[in-house]
Amino acid sequence: MNTVLILSQPTDIHAIAVTEALARKGVEGVLWYTSDFPTRATETVRFEKGRRSVRLHGPELELSEHGVGTVWNRRPALVIDERRIHPADHDFVEQGCGTFRRSLLDTLAPEAFWVNPHRAVERTSKLRQHQLALETGLEVPDTLYTNDPEEIRAFLREHGGQIVYKPFRMTAWRDDTKYYMTYTSLLTEAQLIDDELLSIVPGIYQALVPKAYELRVTVMGRRAFAAKVLSQETRSGRLDWRRAYDELKMEPFELPAEVAEQCWALMRRLDIVFGCFDFIVQPDGRYVFLEVNQAGQFLFVEHDTGQPLLDAFAEFLRQGSVDFEWSPERVSVRYSEVQEAALQRFEREQELHVQEPETTWYEGPGEPPSA
Image (cartoon, rainbow, N blue to C red; front, side, top):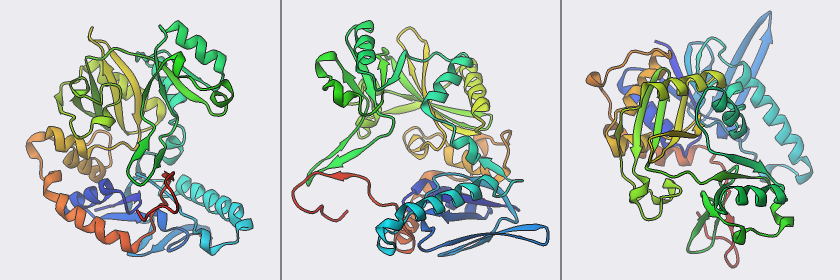
């Protein structure tokens, strides 16, 4: 049976849980902690006598691409150890490692089934998703991507003086007592900062869409698992349900066939085979597409709704096909059954492998406390 290669990092409980699930199905799942490169791992491509070979070597890893049937391109990373290089050499080292890794992933295991292809992953930006969603017939909110203060103020006036703001990438700050995250925020003209600061970084400015509830749709190949997110029943998650994780409730949902077909059409355009879709369902029943995350989380959906997503995803990887065979009547692995083993392995992996450095900006007095 072919090996399933999983590209991730040691803080990713999803990758570890899926590896445990595969093992219980008799499948070898190899965790390639890509963050070990270049500090604790080596990656080699050799062309010799008309043949190509790949060797990956690191803690608990000794692998060639031979025999790899499926690649889960989960969360690849590389971590430069600043202590080992002169500051003047940082750009040289970072560019060299980045260029090599991108080239390796672009050519690795060409016959394998990729979830998702590396080149496609690099082309799933919010702007491109928005454009292709329109072309596939999905309804999307009126949205402005800009750093132009005049455009922002005009957009606000055109949409009743109240819109939402989203950053292109979530960022976090902390002091000694709290974390501060850049969630989706309500915005009025009175809340706008000075034009000079508005123009420094582009943002996503979006019309405020009325919600009856929201959907999280996990798509694996030609199968879609939908969960109804009861965000409007929370105190703090009505605008962004991620803020209300502790009080949020979800339940299984029957996705209309037309919406599922639109999801699959968008995935074909993006050249991806797995994605987690976020939708708003308006009070009048219309479905509004927000985004698709090609490396989205899904274990929390199984935990909250009971849908056997881990079993289905393990079969998706095991069979390596968008048309994989699976039935909810033949589930063999549940997240609750592997969770303890996954957490134990998670703790052990922290000592063996390189973790990405914390990116949270510390704003407290003195030096930040240890993580």
